[in-house]
Amino acid sequence: MKKQNFLWMAVMCFTLFFSCQSEDVIENESTNKEEVQLAKQGTVTINHTYDYYGKQFKVSYVYNEESGEVLKTDGDVDLAQEIFGDEERAPKSLFFDNQKEGSTDIQVKVFDNGEDLQEYASKVAEEFPGDQVATEGRSSKCDSYDIYGTGDFYFYKHAYYNTYMSGMSRMNRYYYRDHWVGSGYNDQLSSLIVKKPWNRRALVYLYQHSCYGGKVIGFYQSTGPSGFGIANLKWYTMSGWWFWRKSWNDQVSSTKGWAW
Image (tube, rainbow, N blue to C red; front, side, top):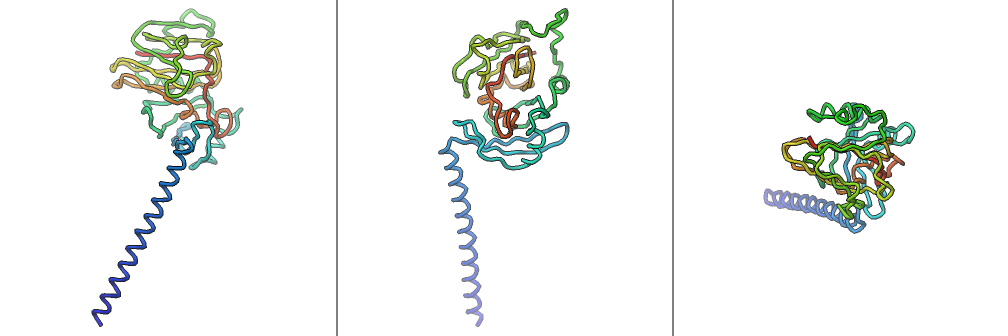
């Protein structure tokens, strides 16, 4: 009788083990198939963690790199749509602090306007010189200015640093501002690289309109690294500034940069 009980228990354990293994295999196969399918479609999953004046929420975007369309969203989608969905009321500024190049996990600070963004940046970026280094005695904001230094700002027409825009880029700058990138470069920026000495900080602002108007994106890097790259601006603007679940890309008409 004991022998029969032992055999029965052995059979049950084997059955349970095999069943669990089968479920794992099926689950793994399903996951792998989904990843393969996404890869074939030229898609990538971008994970945004937003901070909107202390209100934090997360959204994952399945993004088609070829078409520029967001195929799927997961996470706090309702809250994101509430904040970003109405173009008139949507926040106007995004800030990225020490973003790791190539990472699909992106931390986003969200602000209603450029003034709030600049106030936050001045606190995060230690010893930030601001515009006052170049605006003293100037009444119009529709001007360009340069102070030479050790920062290099490279801009590209296409994603992944393709088609260098030499007339829009700036070399050896401590500070610069470009109130109009020119008709040849307007609304064409898709990627950028900023280089600096390891013991310097860097900040670049990208503006929707000329004369530093409209919506603005800020990228900041502290001391330590010798620069950063933004390989595809669309990864950073999935919030739907223009339309919900649509990325803002190429919409840059003026820029500012610092390396101090």
